[in-house]
Image (cartoon, rainbow, N blue to C red; front, side, top):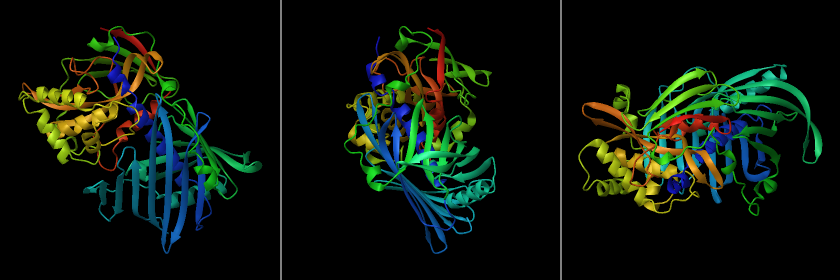
Length: 509
């Protein structure tokens, strides 16, 4: 039994996870590009994947009085199952010459409307202003904890350590595309090398760079004698991701080139096929990394996890009898918050919610299921050429893949007063996009409902038709409340698993 609709959207989370990984790797590379202290810098790069050019990055550092301004901008195109999607990101960090943070900004355009997050550092907190279209939200966020350096100060520190002959350099910094999360970058294996740059051989310094936000995703960087990044190489989802220094004209000469297919090559082939996957009620799987440690796998209402060793775990998924939710989840305001990605206060989202619940039963689980069924029928254009749209966008254009189904459902659940989040992970398919008997990356909603005096997280997949909300081939690898300032952070761990995870099917019934 094939589940075409679910699998048509099944790779939105895989795409979003790849976006998160690219953002973290590329923007950090741009901001840690090094260079002479106090100099204005302007560098263009070509972004390549699977042997083809997919986009460009522009990195600058400038001085304005006593301020140092680091900027990075990138655009790239990817193809998923024949559908091409385009994405754009901008970051800016302003700091003093002494390395004190002043402000930072991140603009991400994964859907039709960009999400613009601006941060102003104060003595006691950070003021976050998040904009999408006409929606503007302001909040106070806690200051990042511990010792860390803004980008320009981090560059200065790393360059000084490299010039002193250090063999390993560790620096804690912040990249605006990841919100206020501190990234620890460890540079090691520092050695001289030669590299072809612009048709000529130049002497460079080669080093390996690991970033804490993406465990297991290491980069090799090459810097010239001025400390400027000239090339970086990263293996992401089994695909080489390469940045090469270029002129502006070279970097932007991409219009005539077709975007490469990035989805099909990353399907996970399990140990055996799963008959009747769509009606499965219990599944037992062993997840294993090809090398390194397996990141923590979450336990949810339907999912139990048994750690086997550092690199593997047994995951049991059951579609009934959900476990009790932690009391802290019920009291956490983020699961009811109206955010840029999940704007429960949006007029159109509220209108759809009222329409969906007009004749719904009164129980929270029943109301949540009514919303799930409504979202499934409301999104008519179930395609893969939408990047990662917000609930407000999907409410208006009624198109998208699994990410759009999940985000709209989460927004409508919150509009109905039901706590909600999105889960990202795996789903099984008999056949999809030329692959057979595969697991693909997927996203769905989870609702925290109260019934019979107990509270449970309930899984709700809006890509499924009316017959059932969920099956036991959904394996959650992370979840997110889609908060302002960090809307896809729950998928950072997902990105570190791409291309490195295997699935052994022990039992499904």
